[in-house]
Image (cartoon, rainbow, N blue to C red):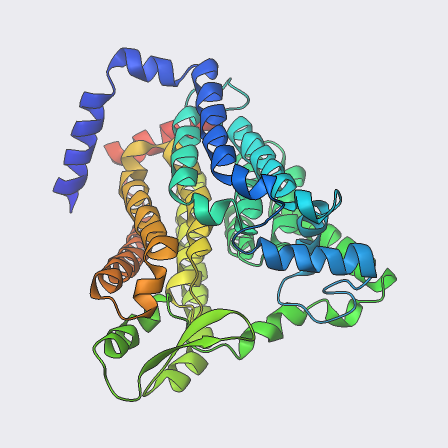
Length: 435
């Protein structure tokens, strides 16, 4: 595998001459790149915007916003909801100008947060090492644009980037942003756990997170929805194996090959595709405890690595990557937007040391491209049993497992006896410069 990544490095070095590298590290070039990409996004969405329509998950979001803004029925307040209550903030914001402009306001909100993430990564043009991260984030955003522009992960992913970048110098702001992201979509809790485990400012982070969470709980209580505050946890507990989840891949093959009693079906209640077959109910019931067991094991590894005085910046990012990828690999639910859980951590890691992060960086780009091929391009053929579509899904899920294994291997290396070598010294030097 190292030979493959050596070839990638060689081709990148050949393509990026010194003059091109210098150009990519200019604020003007980055701004033009950002504006060009989001102009492409806008033109792609323009027919939908002009007709007052919505795409992706936004029809559901718009319905929820209309129920609240026009009828006073708020999800998570007046009824149990599949998302944490904070998700209503962006969902309602996009509806304040009426249903016909919902797609436009959601795009502007996403674009604005992406701009803040790029600004944070580069310290608004002043941190040269952050340009690699910024360009990486923009390219990955392009590859995952069908979900990044149309689902809540497009809101939370840039928030996680901002929190990771600000953690060293502004821990209160970083913790507040990360806690807010967690109350919008649960997955940033994995990053929060990594921060609390490794950060020297853990007391500040915990107290800030607790204060923000207390504010959320108090708001829910004042609005009369305290009983539904944690409803999103139970809403997910009875889910079956979802089509795209890595653990489901074997059963998808059986269904595609026509194995009796193994079928892909639509769960109309939550508008998703699930798989039923021999052993699926048992595996679905086991995946949540297995996932939390994996998270506990990763937590222990991080504590051991910290005890051995591993580089804090690298330990934080590798630990976060391991925790987030465990959330995906051991999850009975699998959706394309989950890839946006991984990209923020990898993007920030790329800015600390390309040598240390080239493997997950390349893997993540391949995973992102395959994810978009699976959904939305080949999703309907996949449901109908198309072999090529299934090969794409299998390759994507296999690479997710490889990425998880890489993060565990690196975490185990950090947890071992401390060895001062050239690569470790370079990584620490790069990390210090990045901060």
